[in-house]
Image 1: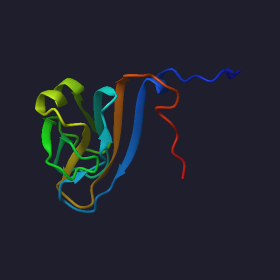
Image 2: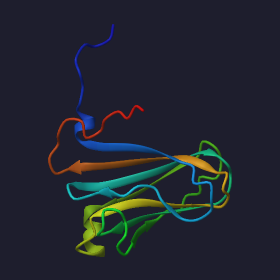
Image 3: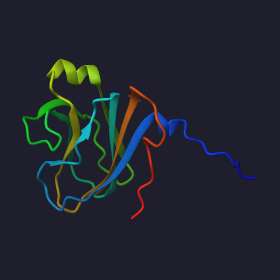
Length: 142
């Protein structure tokens, strides 16, 4: 029998978002810029769904919410998710952002795929919120 209560423990302490990454090209792409103002840590993952080519990925920080300012590289990935089903994680802390520049508030995962047919799913997890609150993580149904 299913439990009748609603559980919102983890989703009140983490903001988790997923993105379909199908750039149809080989240029570096910023997946999505997110605000780190009220979070202590950022983790991004890339899960390969199509292709086996080389991949580079890094966390960039910026003072502008749309990435239009000057990018600062915070971390670069070293694991090579080069087969379907492979995945890799990359993480940074708010302290690392602060040490790289006092006005760096927004982060993105920047991906470069070697072929235009490769695809994957990117997951962002921002956790250690300053104030836990209901539905930091929520469903996205089109």
